[in-house]
Image (cartoon, rainbow, N blue to C red):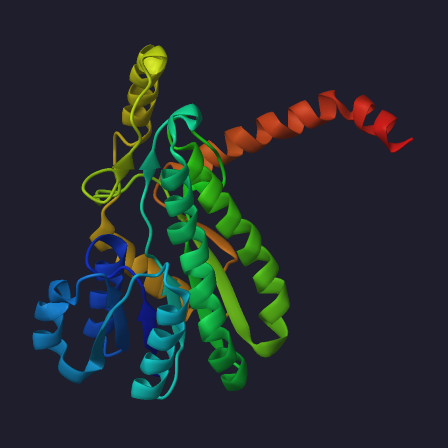
Length: 274
Protein backbone atom coordinates (compact mmCIF):
# COMPACT_ATOMS: atom_id res chain seq x y z
CA UNK A 1 0.00 0.00 0.00
CA UNK A 2 1.32 3.46 -0.91
CA UNK A 3 2.53 5.59 1.95
CA UNK A 4 0.17 8.37 2.98
CA UNK A 5 0.69 11.93 4.13
CA UNK A 6 -1.47 12.94 7.10
CA UNK A 7 -2.38 16.33 8.51
CA UNK A 8 -3.66 15.89 12.08
CA UNK A 9 -4.76 18.60 14.49
CA UNK A 10 -4.56 18.18 18.23
CA UNK A 11 -1.68 15.69 18.34
CA UNK A 12 -0.33 16.51 21.79
CA UNK A 13 -2.42 13.75 23.42
CA UNK A 14 -5.40 11.45 23.08
CA UNK A 15 -6.61 10.24 19.70
CA UNK A 16 -4.47 12.69 17.76
CA UNK A 17 -1.22 11.48 19.27
CA UNK A 18 -2.13 7.77 19.05
CA UNK A 19 -3.16 8.08 15.40
CA UNK A 20 -0.06 10.07 14.49
CA UNK A 21 2.17 7.41 16.05
CA UNK A 22 0.30 4.61 14.27
CA UNK A 23 0.68 6.36 10.91
CA UNK A 24 4.38 7.05 11.48
CA UNK A 25 5.11 3.52 12.69
CA UNK A 26 3.82 2.03 9.47
CA UNK A 27 5.91 4.38 7.31
CA UNK A 28 3.48 7.23 6.62
CA UNK A 29 4.33 10.91 7.10
CA UNK A 30 2.50 13.28 9.42
CA UNK A 31 2.08 17.03 9.74
CA UNK A 32 1.22 17.20 13.44
CA UNK A 33 -0.29 20.32 14.96
CA UNK A 34 -0.43 21.27 18.62
CA UNK A 35 -0.69 24.42 20.63
CA UNK A 36 2.70 23.51 22.14
CA UNK A 37 4.97 21.55 19.80
CA UNK A 38 7.28 20.67 22.69
CA UNK A 39 4.85 17.80 23.30
CA UNK A 40 5.96 16.36 19.94
CA UNK A 41 9.68 16.41 20.65
CA UNK A 42 9.93 12.68 21.30
CA UNK A 43 8.19 11.91 18.01
CA UNK A 44 10.52 14.21 16.06
CA UNK A 45 13.51 12.48 17.67
CA UNK A 46 12.09 9.07 16.79
CA UNK A 47 10.74 9.67 13.29
CA UNK A 48 12.84 12.54 11.99
CA UNK A 49 11.79 14.23 8.76
CA UNK A 50 8.62 12.14 8.42
CA UNK A 51 6.94 14.27 11.06
CA UNK A 52 6.42 18.01 10.65
CA UNK A 53 5.48 19.64 13.98
CA UNK A 54 3.35 22.75 13.56
CA UNK A 55 2.32 25.09 16.34
CA UNK A 56 -1.33 25.94 15.77
CA UNK A 57 -4.41 27.33 17.45
CA UNK A 58 -7.17 26.10 15.14
CA UNK A 59 -9.42 29.06 15.94
CA UNK A 60 -6.99 31.26 13.95
CA UNK A 61 -8.24 30.94 10.35
CA UNK A 62 -5.21 32.60 8.76
CA UNK A 63 -2.85 30.35 10.72
CA UNK A 64 -4.89 27.29 9.71
CA UNK A 65 -4.46 28.08 6.02
CA UNK A 66 -0.76 28.78 6.52
CA UNK A 67 -0.22 25.49 8.37
CA UNK A 68 -1.96 23.42 5.70
CA UNK A 69 0.05 25.17 2.98
CA UNK A 70 3.29 24.58 4.86
CA UNK A 71 2.48 20.89 5.24
CA UNK A 72 1.62 20.55 1.56
CA UNK A 73 4.79 22.32 0.47
CA UNK A 74 6.91 20.20 2.81
CA UNK A 75 5.52 16.80 1.82
CA UNK A 76 4.26 17.55 -1.70
CA UNK A 77 0.76 16.15 -1.14
CA UNK A 78 -1.94 15.53 1.48
CA UNK A 79 -3.84 12.26 1.70
CA UNK A 80 -5.58 12.23 5.08
CA UNK A 81 -6.74 15.36 6.92
CA UNK A 82 -7.89 14.69 10.47
CA UNK A 83 -9.77 17.39 12.36
CA UNK A 84 -9.21 16.13 15.88
CA UNK A 85 -8.54 19.33 17.87
CA UNK A 86 -11.36 20.10 20.27
CA UNK A 87 -12.46 19.94 23.87
CA UNK A 88 -15.53 19.40 26.03
CA UNK A 89 -17.35 22.31 27.64
CA UNK A 90 -19.38 21.23 30.65
CA UNK A 91 -22.28 23.20 32.05
CA UNK A 92 -26.06 23.33 31.89
CA UNK A 93 -27.34 25.63 29.16
CA UNK A 94 -28.42 28.36 31.60
CA UNK A 95 -24.99 28.32 33.24
CA UNK A 96 -22.89 29.00 30.16
CA UNK A 97 -21.25 32.37 29.70
CA UNK A 98 -21.12 33.98 26.27
CA UNK A 99 -17.37 33.42 26.12
CA UNK A 100 -17.67 29.74 27.03
CA UNK A 101 -20.31 29.18 24.38
CA UNK A 102 -18.44 31.09 21.66
CA UNK A 103 -15.09 29.46 22.48
CA UNK A 104 -16.62 25.99 22.19
CA UNK A 105 -18.06 26.71 18.75
CA UNK A 106 -14.90 28.51 17.59
CA UNK A 107 -12.74 25.48 18.36
CA UNK A 108 -14.97 22.50 17.62
CA UNK A 109 -16.82 23.91 14.59
CA UNK A 110 -14.89 26.76 13.02
CA UNK A 111 -11.51 25.17 13.67
CA UNK A 112 -12.55 22.10 11.69
CA UNK A 113 -14.20 24.25 9.03
CA UNK A 114 -11.10 26.38 8.43
CA UNK A 115 -8.77 23.36 8.17
CA UNK A 116 -11.22 21.68 5.81
CA UNK A 117 -11.43 24.76 3.60
CA UNK A 118 -7.65 25.11 3.58
CA UNK A 119 -7.08 21.49 2.54
CA UNK A 120 -9.77 21.15 -0.13
CA UNK A 121 -8.00 22.97 -3.00
CA UNK A 122 -5.06 20.55 -2.69
CA UNK A 123 -7.28 17.48 -2.43
CA UNK A 124 -9.43 18.54 -5.38
CA UNK A 125 -6.36 19.18 -7.52
CA UNK A 126 -5.02 15.72 -6.65
CA UNK A 127 -8.37 14.11 -7.34
CA UNK A 128 -8.06 12.22 -4.05
CA UNK A 129 -7.96 12.60 -0.31
CA UNK A 130 -9.83 11.75 2.85
CA UNK A 131 -11.13 14.22 5.43
CA UNK A 132 -11.74 12.64 8.85
CA UNK A 133 -13.83 14.69 11.26
CA UNK A 134 -13.66 13.60 14.89
CA UNK A 135 -17.21 13.98 16.13
CA UNK A 136 -18.79 12.09 19.03
CA UNK A 137 -21.79 10.04 20.07
CA UNK A 138 -22.69 13.52 21.34
CA UNK A 139 -23.02 14.52 17.68
CA UNK A 140 -25.78 11.94 17.26
CA UNK A 141 -27.50 12.16 20.65
CA UNK A 142 -27.50 14.86 23.33
CA UNK A 143 -26.88 14.68 27.06
CA UNK A 144 -27.31 16.87 30.12
CA UNK A 145 -24.44 19.15 31.12
CA UNK A 146 -22.72 19.16 27.71
CA UNK A 147 -25.38 20.90 25.62
CA UNK A 148 -23.04 23.38 23.95
CA UNK A 149 -20.59 20.56 23.20
CA UNK A 150 -23.47 18.63 21.64
CA UNK A 151 -24.34 21.72 19.61
CA UNK A 152 -20.77 21.97 18.29
CA UNK A 153 -20.69 18.33 17.22
CA UNK A 154 -24.16 18.45 15.64
CA UNK A 155 -22.90 21.40 13.58
CA UNK A 156 -19.81 19.43 12.56
CA UNK A 157 -22.03 16.51 11.56
CA UNK A 158 -24.27 18.74 9.46
CA UNK A 159 -21.64 20.55 7.43
CA UNK A 160 -19.62 17.36 6.96
CA UNK A 161 -22.57 15.44 5.53
CA UNK A 162 -23.12 18.27 3.06
CA UNK A 163 -19.40 18.38 2.33
CA UNK A 164 -19.31 14.67 1.48
CA UNK A 165 -21.89 15.24 -1.25
CA UNK A 166 -20.11 18.34 -2.57
CA UNK A 167 -16.66 16.80 -2.99
CA UNK A 168 -17.48 13.22 -4.01
CA UNK A 169 -17.06 13.99 -7.72
CA UNK A 170 -13.48 15.16 -7.02
CA UNK A 171 -12.52 11.82 -5.48
CA UNK A 172 -12.46 13.23 -1.95
CA UNK A 173 -13.91 11.12 0.86
CA UNK A 174 -15.36 12.34 4.18
CA UNK A 175 -15.76 10.30 7.35
CA UNK A 176 -17.25 11.33 10.69
CA UNK A 177 -15.72 9.31 13.52
CA UNK A 178 -18.13 9.20 16.48
CA UNK A 179 -16.45 7.88 19.63
CA UNK A 180 -18.18 6.92 22.84
CA UNK A 181 -16.37 7.15 26.16
CA UNK A 182 -12.60 6.61 25.90
CA UNK A 183 -9.74 6.79 28.39
CA UNK A 184 -8.53 10.16 27.17
CA UNK A 185 -8.44 13.41 29.15
CA UNK A 186 -11.50 14.73 27.29
CA UNK A 187 -13.27 15.19 30.63
CA UNK A 188 -10.01 15.95 32.45
CA UNK A 189 -7.38 18.63 31.94
CA UNK A 190 -8.59 19.60 28.47
CA UNK A 191 -12.22 20.11 29.56
CA UNK A 192 -13.76 23.36 30.77
CA UNK A 193 -16.62 23.75 33.24
CA UNK A 194 -19.10 26.59 33.64
CA UNK A 195 -19.83 28.04 37.07
CA UNK A 196 -22.75 25.96 38.43
CA UNK A 197 -25.98 27.55 39.59
CA UNK A 198 -27.25 26.40 43.01
CA UNK A 199 -30.70 25.59 41.64
CA UNK A 200 -29.17 22.86 39.46
CA UNK A 201 -27.28 21.11 42.27
CA UNK A 202 -29.50 18.01 42.28
CA UNK A 203 -29.63 17.92 38.48
CA UNK A 204 -25.83 18.06 38.31
CA UNK A 205 -25.57 15.09 40.63
CA UNK A 206 -28.02 13.13 38.48
CA UNK A 207 -26.17 14.09 35.28
CA UNK A 208 -22.85 13.00 36.80
CA UNK A 209 -24.29 9.62 37.71
CA UNK A 210 -25.68 9.13 34.21
CA UNK A 211 -22.28 9.99 32.74
CA UNK A 212 -20.55 7.47 35.01
CA UNK A 213 -22.96 4.84 33.71
CA UNK A 214 -22.32 5.78 30.05
CA UNK A 215 -18.53 5.60 30.38
CA UNK A 216 -18.25 2.78 32.92
CA UNK A 217 -16.20 0.73 30.43
CA UNK A 218 -14.16 3.29 28.46
CA UNK A 219 -12.43 2.42 25.21
CA UNK A 220 -8.69 2.26 24.73
CA UNK A 221 -7.30 5.19 22.69
CA UNK A 222 -4.30 3.07 21.66
CA UNK A 223 -6.59 0.40 20.22
CA UNK A 224 -8.46 3.06 18.26
CA UNK A 225 -5.38 3.53 16.07
CA UNK A 226 -5.95 0.19 14.33
CA UNK A 227 -9.54 1.25 13.67
CA UNK A 228 -8.59 4.59 12.10
CA UNK A 229 -6.04 2.88 9.85
CA UNK A 230 -8.77 0.51 8.67
CA UNK A 231 -10.98 3.50 7.85
CA UNK A 232 -8.41 5.51 5.89
CA UNK A 233 -7.26 2.44 3.95
CA UNK A 234 -10.78 1.45 2.87
CA UNK A 235 -11.65 1.93 -0.80
CA UNK A 236 -15.16 2.99 0.19
CA UNK A 237 -14.93 4.41 3.71
CA UNK A 238 -18.11 5.13 5.67
CA UNK A 239 -19.58 8.58 6.05
CA UNK A 240 -20.17 7.79 9.71
CA UNK A 241 -18.59 5.21 11.99
CA UNK A 242 -18.84 4.70 15.75
CA UNK A 243 -15.71 4.04 17.81
CA UNK A 244 -16.39 1.99 20.91
CA UNK A 245 -18.82 -0.69 22.05
CA UNK A 246 -21.67 1.46 23.39
CA UNK A 247 -22.51 4.25 20.88
CA UNK A 248 -24.53 2.08 18.48
CA UNK A 249 -27.00 1.03 21.16
CA UNK A 250 -27.32 4.62 22.36
CA UNK A 251 -28.04 5.84 18.84
CA UNK A 252 -30.52 3.06 18.09
CA UNK A 253 -32.53 3.81 21.22
CA UNK A 254 -32.46 7.55 20.54
CA UNK A 255 -33.55 7.21 16.91
CA UNK A 256 -36.29 4.71 17.77
CA UNK A 257 -37.67 7.22 20.26
CA UNK A 258 -37.52 10.03 17.68
CA UNK A 259 -39.29 8.01 14.99
CA UNK A 260 -42.01 6.94 17.41
CA UNK A 261 -42.65 10.54 18.43
CA UNK A 262 -42.63 11.81 14.83
CA UNK A 263 -45.15 9.15 13.86
CA UNK A 264 -47.31 9.93 16.90
CA UNK A 265 -47.50 13.59 15.85
CA UNK A 266 -47.69 13.03 12.12
CA UNK A 267 -51.32 14.17 12.07
CA UNK A 268 -50.14 17.59 13.19
CA UNK A 269 -47.38 17.48 10.58
CA UNK A 270 -49.98 16.93 7.88
CA UNK A 271 -52.17 19.65 9.36
CA UNK A 272 -49.27 22.07 8.94
CA UNK A 273 -48.95 21.10 5.27
CA UNK A 274 -52.30 22.72 4.47
